[in-house]
Length: 189
Ligand code: HEC
Image (tube, rainbow, N blue to C red; front, top):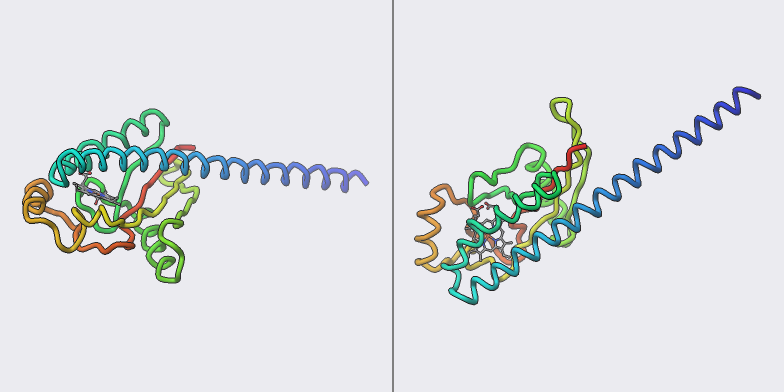
């Protein structure tokens, strides 16, 4: 009798612990999604405004200076790391770590298997050097406007500017619909 009461109490505690963990994960996913959505919209707005004002050559500075600045503002505000990365980076300081590489490779496989690129996301609790973090990634599809600077045929004037800024540029030759890269979030736990 006593045992079964303990067993029931234990089971109830465990169930509520699992429920809590699931709630916590759902909350972290929702917060990551919202943060990235805000980041993406801000970036798109700045990019479109700069393109309109002075064409792609003018807009390069949005990607070059504004994107990292927005990412670092959000990171400071949240106490997380928020950034953009890719399997083919333009700026080598955006290069992925091993976990990010693995996730983006799985995005490529999932896309090849028919999942829409704009729906690809993944999250996991990762432990490294004794530190636990909640990590989240969302794929960034290549749109028409991206091709001006990431496509196969880039205006020579823009190409020259990209060459001088990014001697190690791998982010050309993309087609519309390709996965250009991903947003990445890391929340310390
Ligand atoms: C005006 C030129 C231009 C356009 C248009 C443009 N980009 Fe970029 N993109 C850049 C530059 C420059 C960088 C390097 C930014 C840096 O130094 O961090 C970059 C970097 C990136 C990165 C970070 C990873 C990396 O390669 O270093 C992603 C992801 C990205 N762009 C996606 C896009 C997407 C998606 C679009 C379309 C919505 C787009 N870009 C449109 C110029 C452009």
